[in-house]
Length: 406
Image (cartoon, rainbow, N blue to C red; front, side, top):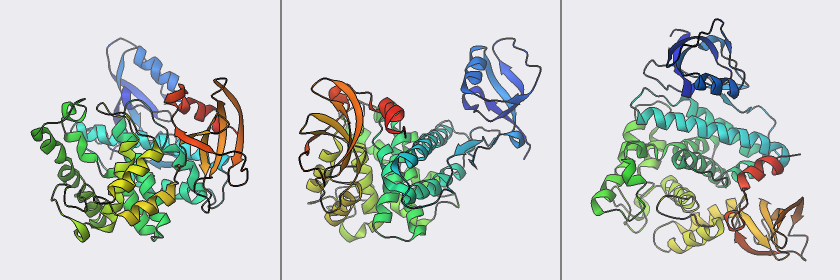
């Protein structure tokens, strides 16, 4: 493969070495070659009407580990930075690991966005970059699982499918580790979580984003995404039968009311039952055009209710034990009228986790962060689960600016 590849301006990344401009709407002349060192340079090129450039892949700056993904019909592989997976495992402080976890999470969403977009546009694609997310997720969870689990609560406008795929990958990895599975199985289930809904890109947007109730015909079309996912993934060596079978049955339900086959009971594999729980939970706490998000703690209560017929109750209980009755990263209101984020679990006291209080509802302003172990401080307790939206808190921004500060 040639080192020189055409790259659209939308796919240009910092660290890439630009050789020349090959398509533009203006008349900008670039007389020298060089590495893109900041996003502001990319913005400047866009403003000048640059549409496509030639990149020397061999000169791309590789920040830590590399991963790639096919994005264009030219077969170009674009440099993509993946957070370091070589840091020591075990008992890494939350404040340290959350920095790595945040970078990993953002990068993973970007990789998945590129993959989904490539498939949507009918371009060549591969799963190399997505498979690299698997190792990075596993390493982060081994260092401090709370950090990456916290990231799955960060909700941003738009891009639901990329965010959902990453969340399900992370949650499946954590779930599988909590179940005591060997590393190979953990990796397979992580990949299944990352790729389970890839067929959604072939479902018409007017159906996926319809604000009202779907018709019977529209439901039938939407349900085809499972078979489409399997068809899209089957040719790749990274996707073995365990991954395919897990994806194939993740919308089946124990009472036979699921799809695409309507199988029931023991005919649904253990791994598919796990993915069904993870997929439903993350969908519940996500905002969609046709529904508002449900609080994480309330979503778990609903899963328990539905486990009377549709989900494996034992697995639901194990999943709740894994992420917490009040899930890691979710918000709660304390009796003292402070808002706090769940940062760690007390396994012997599931209703008294460790939290970081940061906002006063009495005075409606941010407070100096205070970490409270509710298992030790019995004068404080959780009043109810809540959301940033309820108090108009820009939680994503606050999280990035404050909770990550050492």
